[in-house]
Amino acid sequence: MGNREAELREVDDRAREPVSEAVAGFDAIVSDTGLRHDGSISHTRLKSYLRHRHPMIGVDQVLKHDFKAGWLHAVRAVSSSHPAFEGHFEDAAIYPGTHLTQDVIQLGIVLFIGSTRALQGEDGNQEMTTVSSLAIELGHPVPPGSLLDVALWRTAGKGARSIAFDFEARVRDFPFYAGSNAVGLSFRPALTGRAELVRVKRRTYDGIGF
Image (cartoon, rainbow, N blue to C red):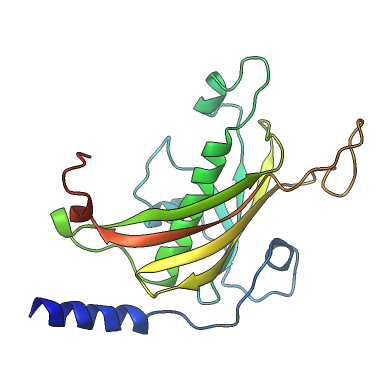
C-alpha cells in the first residue's frame, strides 16, 4: 500500500510539472520590456513561500515573474542597517557573498514552490526544501546602498521533487560592467551561478539534531 501511495504521489508531482516556453538569461528577463509575465510579488506575499523569518529573510520584492515559464526578476536593496555590516568590515563595508547567495537561494525557493505546490506534512513528514548542489562566481564587492537586480531561470526540474536553475545578480547602474574604473578594470556581475533544490521530508535528516 505504501509503495502504491508513493507511485501515485510521483505521478501527481509529474503532472504538476509546468510546461511553457523557456526564458533564459539576465538580459532577456530583466531588460526585455515586451516579455510576458504575471506581475509582481510583494514582500509580504513572498514571506508566505518561505520558512525564514527576520532577520534571515533576504528577499525584498519580485518585480515580475512567470512561474509556468520558470523565471523571476527580483530586487534586493542592501541596507547599511543590515546586521552583517557590524562586522564585515569596520574599515570597508561589504555585503557578504554568503548572504547574497542565501538571498538568491530564497528566491529559488519562491520559484520552486510557486511553480509546483506548497510544502505539506507535519512532524517527520513535514516537507522541506534543501540545496543539493550550488556553484557560484563572485564578480565584485557589493557596498551598502546598492540596489541589486536578480534574475533566476529554471534549467531543469522533476515536478515537485526538484528544480535546477541559473541565476545572476547585478548592481543597478553599476558603471564598470561595460566600462572601466580608474585603474582600467571592468567587472563581471556581482553574483552568477547555478543551483538545485530538492523537496525532502524532515525525517530524512533524523539524528542530525535540528
